[in-house]
Image (cartoon, rainbow, N blue to C red):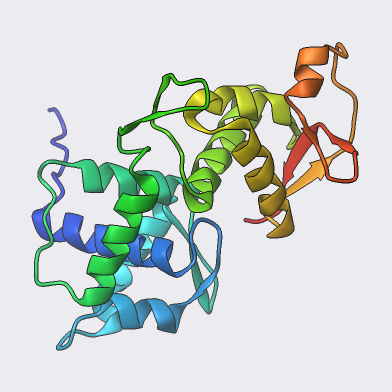
Length: 225
């Protein structure tokens, strides 16, 4: 007998999306948020925080969030699920939402409009599909790209920067890629390391990063959870 997959109800879809959107707005991917701060954002008047425990447990089981005793953080998978939910034609908020949720949604649209399919012009005058125009949007894409390359090619947590740059491609300008990768290092998301390119190819070296002090950085190592 075939097993029928349970379809997510509109209320479940709405509540899941509100939780993920709140975490994204409060801290972004990988940033730990106090559970109390999240509760204030997601639990409407007349409901209890315990009402949301099954939902949070399921999101953790699915890998969309990571929790400690006192904190919650959004994972790369959770950010991807948020984007998928917001793009779902069946998604609607199940109840009236407050200004913070509405403003978080506006922030998502403004920062992730490229990820949602907007075509922008890059520095070469060509149309870049899914252009990335903000640090937060770049952070999400860079982490996703890093994790995929690291897993698919068994890179032992040392992913060549040139490969990340080439995977993202024309969605971000070269100058913004350099600036935002260095900012990710400043924010303890990545550590950018020296090293040698496997075949010393000039184009791969060029697609790595040179710091303001003239030091070449060839590999990225993820620091945050």
